[in-house]
Length: 409
Image 1 (cartoon, rainbow, N blue to C red):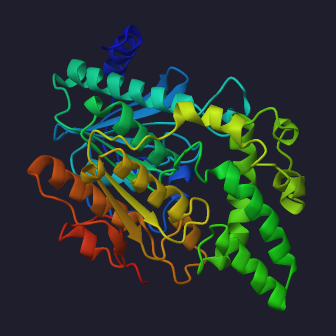
Image 2: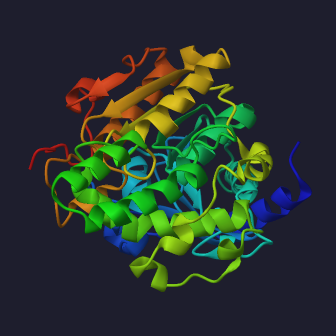
Image 3: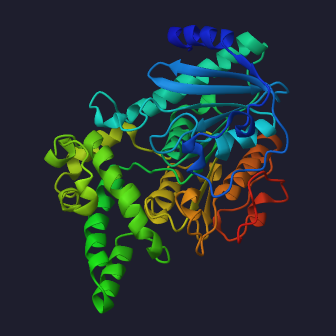
């Protein structure tokens, strides 16, 4: 049943659309959050004129775009990390707008470091996106006299988690989802608050060592879940992801631990021992009690395709992607899920810009998975089996992609 707030917001959105000559990033420019996520932006072969609304929906900031030549379908972009509503403008919006889809995204109501506020919670993400979907659908009916024929969710990282939660808890509102490296929150599993302290401590020792000792410490970090082959990225992850992720989500899930209660300190980048000292096993039960309300069940009610690189050094494939696939299977829903392991793919394609190395972008596989989801839902064509994919052609199945598919250059 539609909430009164959704009805009010839909009236406001329907009356507030601006007409634009180009809804893509070529016409509007690309936000830094969008640029940070790609190795190369997608092709934009023509402008997409249409209508755009941007503003507040509850505590969240949202963007809604509708092409003038709308195909009648809607894609919801579930944003990664704690980035803005513009974060998926390259990875999703530019792609789907050129295919004729309407597009909507939100900042999940927790942008930047908002989660440091005890009044904010990861539980808000689900409700921010349910509200966005309700508002967008109702606004389309009011403004364009049509409800979406199909609604798909495409999410990345934390947004991948959102896509899964929507597929589990709100399957009646969507027709399918693609998640790229969704975060798997399992109160008993290898979640971030369990893995990060050991990696932070282990990497500090590894970085100081050399010779046989360095090799021993490297092997220990691999045993703890870090992907072999991606060692050249560990220092970047340590500085950019591990420390701030542990502090921010630890502050939200275990706010009583003294160090998490402190303001962020850049001193931790030089000496991470205070964060590395987090006693994950001792505090596991209290953290589990806070994870359970947001935990994934795997009981999906619509098709979900997962793509993820096996060199992800924040969300290791075994801990997050294989573990989620196992949860889906245990829930009796394996027929609705596919897991595509992308060879030498990392967590964020933007990391490849200055140092490509032997890695390949995941973006083309993400777009290819969306084309497969379309065929599955709308034509009944079963997608390829899950497994390891080394070339995008094997997944794309002849579909023309806007993402750059020259993966080895």
